[in-house]
Length: 216
Image 1 (cartoon, rainbow, N blue to C red):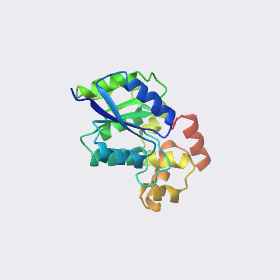
Image 2 (cartoon, rainbow, N blue to C red):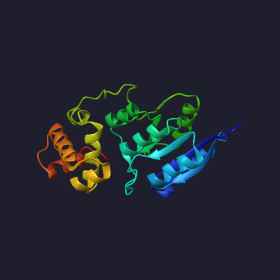
Image 3 (tube, rainbow, N blue to C red):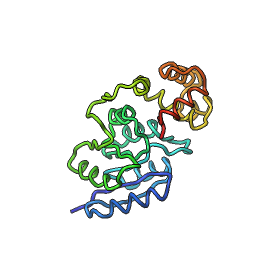
Image 4 (tube, rainbow, N blue to C red):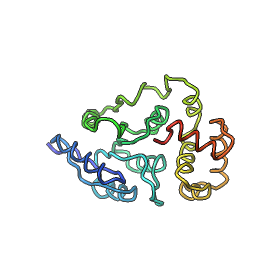
């Protein structure tokens, strides 16, 4: 029987090594490529046409395709036949739910058991969507309604992306260039996010994101 072709993408080689080791325990799957950047990942999509891609959500430093929602939307739009598993440190259930809304086939947390990858792959092979322990609900609504999660819930994915890059140290102008949006649009999205998070300065915004582990 022909093996399921899997491509891995992460900017940390040690993560790629660990994930490959886990996948190769199951003879149904073959790792046919590894990428350290989003550009390498897109190249592998075109060259090997994988059945499944396991990719990190955060892979900074690539101006061509970016990372995060920008990359995922591009991959889903241009390669709809390939299913995507997200391997990430992000643990906020609202953000993870948004990834499912985009069309990814599963999310796995890096701080969990890597053997979960095999469970997820088996689920995808059976043409189902994988929702593991990181998801508290099959719906896009977080059951836990505390104040911080309530504020985060109000963010749009585009606002979330602007904040993610801002917290990483990018200026509004750099974010606009990276996301291919106007400076005016990015600035408005940042202001809207600050209003929703109820912070009134850049310092307060950074502190909120750090304390809430929004990008951990």
